[in-house]
Amino acid sequence: MNVQIEKLLVLQEIDLKIRAMKTRLETIPIQIKNISDQIDAEKKNFATQKELLMSEELDIKKVEAAIKEKEEHIRKLQGQSSMVRKNDEYRALMNEIEAIKKGIGELETRQLELMERIQENKAKVKDIETKLKEKEKQAAEEIKDLGEVEAKVKNEISKFTSERSKHLGDLEKSALSIYERLLAKGSGTPVAEVKDTICSNCHLKLTPHTNNQAKKDLITQCDNCSHIIYYNKE
Image 1: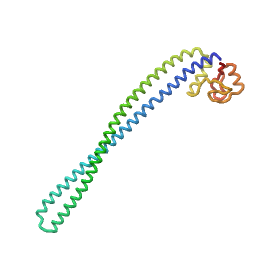
Image 2: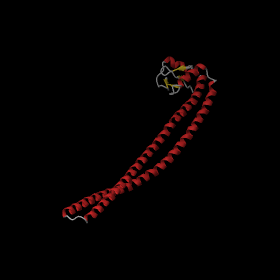
Image 3: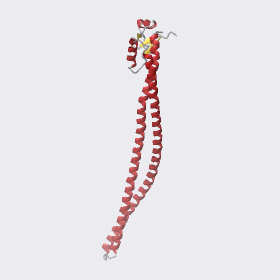
Image 4: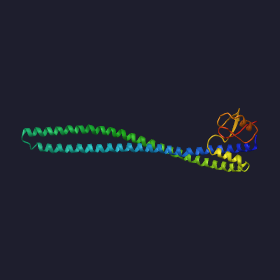
């Protein structure tokens, strides 16, 4: 095998590791954002449920105030009834009192409904709060772990980048220039093995001339994808 290709393959092995680690690095901020977004959604749901509970508690206070107001009104009417002398006026007063009592009955029904709903929602809010705290704790641990992974990957990239630089001096400028240009594409392998006249990078058949050049261990580029190709004669 061409010595330059052997050296390029060593370099390529390092570069593919660096590429994979950089790809991993790109996913970490996305993962952290997804975790944070999920917690934000949970917090928003918790806040919404608390607001609903507070609204219902305010409603029941209004109902209680309305009941007291009507009861006070009845007491005033009952006080007036002792001074009424005419039967028609007395009946009208009694009818008004009955209508107010009916209104109180409706308000008390509403009060009971709200009390039941408040009890249910208090339990629901407490459950949501408990689960939210657990999720926040878990999210913090996950984000911490991702931060440690990020630091480790960056350290590995630094080590491999340092190792990479040691191999550059052994390569011919022309071969290295082609390789670097192909590597910059960010996909595929700059140096690809030929198997049965097929380039392993683009999976297309080589022309006879290109295939023969590769067999002669010359620095040869694929007719289709322009990647450097070689035969592994071992």
